[in-house]
Every structure is written in C-alpha cells, then in structure tokens.
Length: 150
Image 1: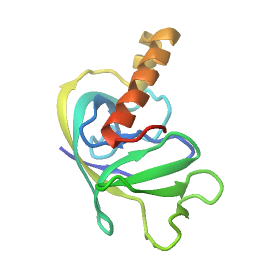
Image 2 (image 1 turned 30 degrees about the vertical axis):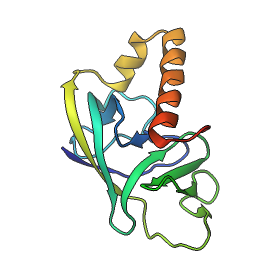
Image 3 (image 1 turned 180 degrees about the vertical axis):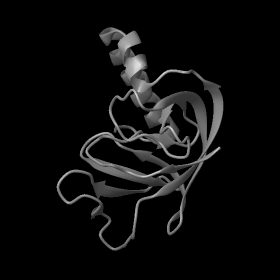
C-alpha cells in the first residue's frame, strides 16, 4: 500500500523509518497517515515501512518526529533537520539545500487491520504500558537509523 505522509508539525506526526514494524494510524480514506495525537477518526493498522521517497530528495531512510525539529534521514545516515515549531518547514541543518515541500510517499506492508482508532488504542493501554512501548520504540529507532541518541 502506498500512502502519503505530510507533516502537520508540532510533534503531531508519526515517525516513519524503513524496516519499522509498528502500529500506524491512517486517515479514513486510507491514503494518508493521520496527523493527530489521538483521534476517534483514524484507523489503526500494524504494518512494516518498506520504502520512503520524496520527489526532490529521492529515497529516505526515515523521518524522526520526536522533538521540535524533525530529522529526515538519508540512506547514508546523514539527515536534514527541519524546524517543526517556530519557523515551520525551514531547514535548520544543513543550510545549503532547498526543499519545496515535505510530502513523502511511503510503502507500507499492512500486516493487520485492527479495527481500532488511536483513541481506542489509547484507552486500552495503561500508562506504564505506554511508557514501556515508547522506550522500546526509541531503542528500535536508534537501531534502525544506526544512531546513538535521538
């Protein structure tokens, strides 16, 4: 399944990294990734990110959306850091490139359609379980991106 990932910024977007298998949330049309923290309007799927491409920059390794700067990782492990709060969409590092938009095409291998929304998942998951899952995700992101810290 090919989906569109378009940032809403402010840490409202899902991290996507090639090789990551996790729960992802899609808009009702199932053509785009959802951009809310928790919603009753999205659809949860468990899937694996297969490929990420950008029309100007080509293939990406992933997008890390933790913090107020997003990092768009290239295949070689380098990244483009983009402001996600004050000067939304402006490149912070490196400053020698220009990108017209941050829309990505993402190939997702859907392994399961759970029938839940992010709101329903949130209600079913206790706080200690959410913290454990977040810690596991962070460790997995570091491994998949081959980096020491987020």
